[in-house]
Picture 1 (tube, rainbow, N blue to C red):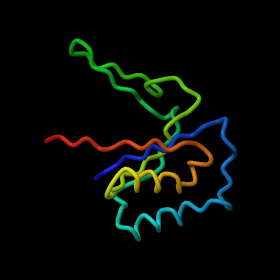
Picture 2 (picture 1 turned 60 degrees about the horizontal axis):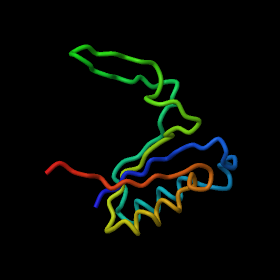
Picture 3 (picture 1 turned 120 degrees about the vertical axis):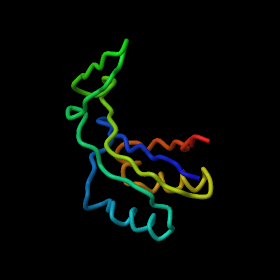
Length: 110
């Protein structure tokens, strides 16, 4: 089953120290398990454009869809057997200690 991991920055969390948490090791574990499908960092919310269509008109707004101190910093799409395995993988992500990782099951169209 596929799960989307939303990697969320948290200004109140401890500062990320790349030397102490190696994201490459986490990615290598995903690849070893055969669970990696896709993933990447995202540019800051200030680089976002929000698209809204109302009454046939397209409205483009600079910035994210919501104002928040937290933001989505990246994502990973994984394919694992169950939620427990997805949560184990999320807990091992370095940003679980320096931000948050939201785990959502993918809900495919049938």
